[in-house]
Length: 67
Image 1 (cartoon, rainbow, N blue to C red):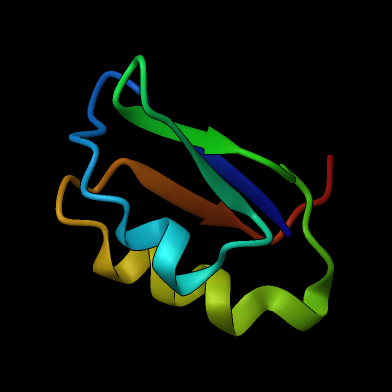
Image 2 (cartoon, rainbow, N blue to C red):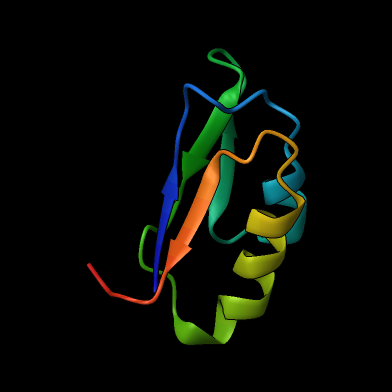
């Protein structure tokens, strides 16, 4: 799977970091999400999908392909 974050849409709610802390970090200075792993292991799919689903700004996308 592949994860993308649109930092222009990100509003710094940090919901993604709560749902999948191994995949999403946070840049406090820029107040935006930081991808820690753009191609996380399949075992994290549930956590990543929840992060995408619960992002209030809809700044995250998840695709099946690997980078």
